[in-house]
Amino acid sequence: MKEQIFSYMQYQENEIVRLADDLIGANTVNPPGNERLAVNIVETYFKTHDIRYDIFEKLREDQI
Image 1 (cartoon, rainbow, N blue to C red):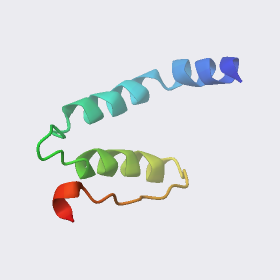
Image 2 (cartoon, one colour; image 1 turned 90 degrees about the vertical axis):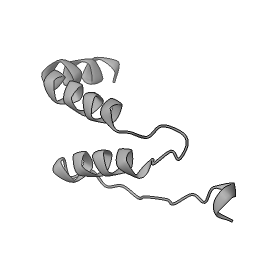
Image 3 (cartoon, rainbow, N blue to C red; image 1 turned 180 degrees about the vertical axis):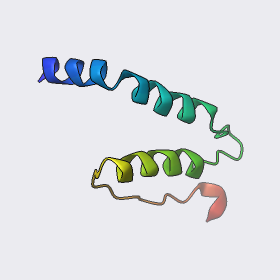
């Protein structure tokens, strides 16, 4: 399994770097911690690669 992951990472290096760059560049700093920006980036990536996913919304203490 480790070899498969390593092989995939080598093959998809540019795409992985682009995804990481997009996530790092998203303004999700606390406060307010707009995590939805990061969720949107990952969601787009998953849709592009036909990866099944679920999104769970979490209420913050200040939203209760």
